[in-house]
Image (cartoon, rainbow, N blue to C red; front, top):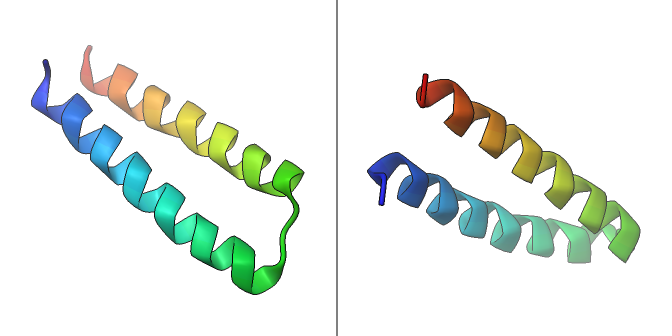
Length: 53
């Protein structure tokens, strides 16, 4: 497995943990949380795809 992909997965878990704490503080709904996570996943895959070139 590519070490860059492992790092991106770790950063995704760290981002999700931090976002969950922010979501509780700001009282965001589940739809806003899902939207941010989907956007983050697309950005991470785009960055990883650029490094594969």
